[in-house]
Length: 79
Image 1: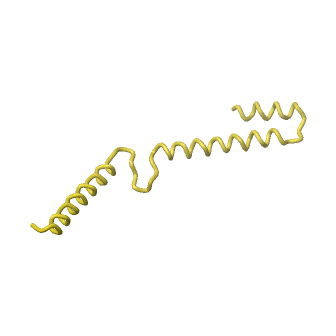
Image 2: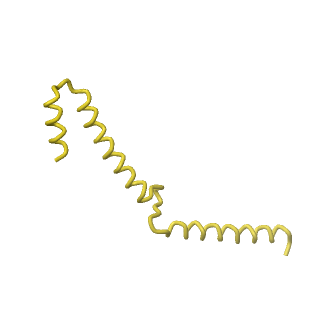
Image 3: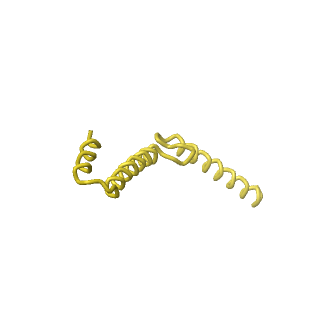
């Protein structure tokens, strides 16, 4: 076997091994090919919920209503 034949064989073995490793990584639970795991989707939903809550708090803090109206709105939002 010549030197270059040995190099090609070693390269082929390394490539096949690498491809199999990549395939096994893709079979793990929760792994998706689009790059987003289930945990990332949960975090995106949580961030969206927090943004909604912050919007409500900003609306309450910036309204020019009297104190009674503010207390009534806070109680309504709790329900």
